[in-house]
Length: 570
Image 1: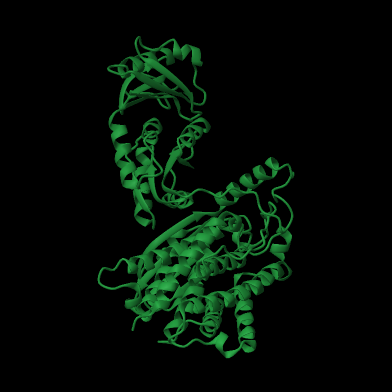
Image 2 (image 1 turned 90 degrees about the horizontal axis):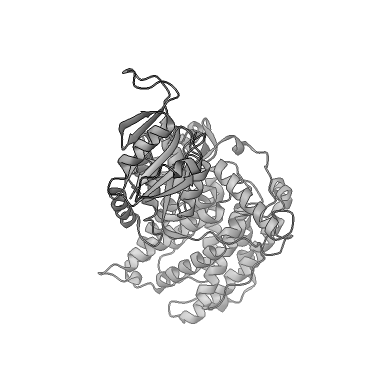
């Protein structure tokens, strides 16, 4: 039977996501529990995006309209999409709220969605969310959802029958009004619960904030009300960011927020928890016998996936570097506080709007593996996100995966900038649940030439193709200090050695070696870029004097170790 409630559901979820996106950064900046990583808003948005994508897929079905598909099928696929799309504690718990509400819908076939069914869905959602957490903490999203469910149940007891229940022939406008009214009353209870959170959870009180997840769920529901009414969302309190603080809790010991899905047969979530707790904390394992979603804070993401090696197939792996998130968040909020003249990162007291600009979402971002302060600035000036590769440019797969995760885009191109990084980058691309393309940049100067072609409005495939074209049009070279004596006696430790591409072409004094490399690189070139490294033995004027006739020499400060000069020719 046709079910117009499903069409309404799609509209409501779109509204929820739109409102959440508008306040995503505000939610991020509240987050201090269970770890001050500042991505609660991001994680909740990703969960809702997965639901929206599934609803859009169903709506695009040429054979059946969304209201012809049937409630059972849609709620099952939506619940699974939410589960697979969830990331972080907040995202996983939100997926369980969605799953609980979906289970209630399935259990009542043929019933029109009305305040009674909404109340039952809230109760099931709260129950499912509490059951998913091994040690539930009061003052969080769990408490807020439970308090809203209790509020709806109490309201229903005092409403007239015609405002609680709707028959199959109910007017759709009337249905929207009743559902929106019920949700708005629940939001009022939710706001009160959010504000009580610091009394229940000391870490919130110490940081001067409310719970980010609990606040986020009231924002989600306000977006649903707006969609049902076709108006602006109900006004909610704004909260200033958390004070820069380091709450003392166990998760500070671990670096990576690790999330992945496991598909198999006869899966029992509880059997895996002890093994995960042996390598980390903040463990969540939720789902059903065929699909589990796993969340754990650990220093060993690969060991976490190995726990399920014999249980099923691991997918949707996502790893976030929480230490990097904390540093970025503190630097940004400190800058905001200084800009606003408050002398702190709060941007004002409780109840005042946080003056933090939202992070723009791009179609595609770039991750560049870089070393050297000047090179970091150069790559960032071209719109690339930078991963510190250390002196040897050799980050791990998990560090690259975390860097991919941190980019506010669903598609990413990776610039390895060293042959040593290619395998780790390719593996990270395979593991990521984003669309990732690895570009063949074998040096930092090559990576810079490729980064020029980045267009954030294009997809990763198009950007990778444009970057490959840019790489084909350049030649690279470098001059470094010899780290060991040459077996053939051509140079000794401390001499200069010069390369064009990967071929050793010159050696001796820094001046003679750089001159020879520039001469070879200048053939058919109009512009040579020269990037000065840490400890380069010639100053800028001396280097400029070595430029071949007819070629423009552009000098940059890279600060890179090991290489005195990195060069590229166009």
